[in-house]
Length: 437
Image: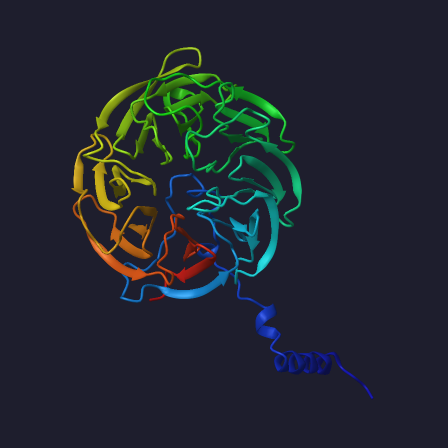
């Protein structure tokens, strides 16, 4: 009997259809707008600003459509790195702390790699978000373990300890929370030690490139690392790394780790948490516990040096961000205001003037973790309430609200990328389609 190629193909199609194989193995091609691009904490530029467009402009009572969810992430407050190849986070499971990789289409487990011991506290679990850099990723455990893993397999390439290798310490009780910065051939982290406030490591081997000493900017705060993550500034014409330590803001020259400037007034003595934001020659930072907020202007001071001058300072009663982050959109700052509060507020970046808010009560309770996309700010509150607010300095315009299933205490930053809203909710990952009501 003569068997043709057409008959073979037809038979294969019938067989595949009978066992449900065709749909599963031939996913539709993604458009460029649907390819996720959120490789690290606070997004590609560490500013919590998404480039997504075409998203829902308002939500009904049920919020956007739930695309899918996954469980098994463990306990923790880590946010998410999301790329076309995977979704990466951290969690405590049993007595160990893991970096976890999930499939981007449905959240099935790809791999998990142990970083160190779990942290059993009243707020248990890791806070660091993995940083994805092509074939490698970097993560920091609560005990200060820095690991470099293969993105595809989770295989460990190298590890360092912020405590044992660099004499690091944290300013208070809540362990290391920073998300590592990858810049060129380096990974830059914050041990918070006397002789190693910030260190740069070779990203391929973990070898020390340079270490920056801890400055003594003033009496406010405590010695050690804070809970913020490093951002890059080119203020004053010098590339530098800026972060918020236990004693306040610090900047070190990217080339060699020389301390350029420091600023103490914005520090508190409990926990300095929000990551600073940079724009041109300016740095804006805030802290809770009544510390307030500041805008600094950077200027060249000759031979690779930079000075920082206070433009304005806001007392805590006017504005303070406990945690959850600050976002700059155009010339407006959006944030949650108040200690353990996420009261929506909009400030003028240049002057610090309150444009609206600061004492607006909505359905959210507790601090609010923020992100921005397509003309709107997404507020995620401790009580599991998600609120959509139009990003305009002309007034507070709430465009929707829905409740997450658990409603449990959680501080993980929401992520908007590839047309989806990703929310880490303790042990679960919830993924919403922002183009479908």
